[in-house]
Length: 349
Image (cartoon, rainbow, N blue to C red; front, side):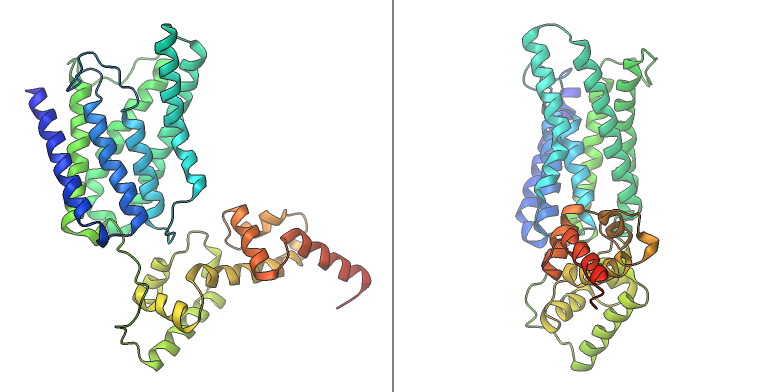
């Protein structure tokens, strides 16, 4: 019976993946591929169950465990509310815990003995994956458009959390959390995770805009914006930055501005890109840079580091701040600070 359920889960997953892939043009590229990665890793998770492997008895396909699925799911929610259109190279680092587990398990198999240091390191990695789960839940709770599937994702998070918590308990020789003495119980949990995720995938196929943002509109040939609307939207965007200082929020996105102003996202994008000749990110960062310059000359921030001041005005990445500052001012933040210091010493205005 268990084998039949596994086969059904595998076939159903492949079918959903095929349907989902056929509609790929409806979705924003980066979130589409991350969600695809999640589906594929679920399929590998089913196939690679060591206790009840579909193809090889007593298999030890440790790479096809929950860690790969969890990493893709984590990155999907990370990019869901982001305006980024490409995958950042630094985010490949989030796959390192899975790669480490793969290498450590390989080493243990070929050495044919347990290594205490590796066991401890693997358990510490469990904390990383627990952090991923917490981050997924946090992002899900603040993503209003995903509220309808909250009931499907939360059980997945709870099931997987228990697995990682038990790994930590094992390190300290504590009693694990046990729900059943059935030898196949862990396999059933895998299948529950799979079917819950399939429910999310089915919902996504039926209502694509709920979970994966559609591709950005890059042309505005069919726009019906009137000149007075364009002027009004420009003023609204400038006012909300200058008066409400939304740029101070490091998580600010065009989606949140759209909701705040009650202006369709497409129109905000058109006004900025076509009528103001600037991208949303550059528009926001321009205000952040000017606020940084003001704070840099404020005695209140005399003991702050440069990035400390940048963090106060909405920057969340040091590299992004440095690159943006040089793009806007033509100098690095340090060079700019030194130029101000020299002007103050010489009394040049």
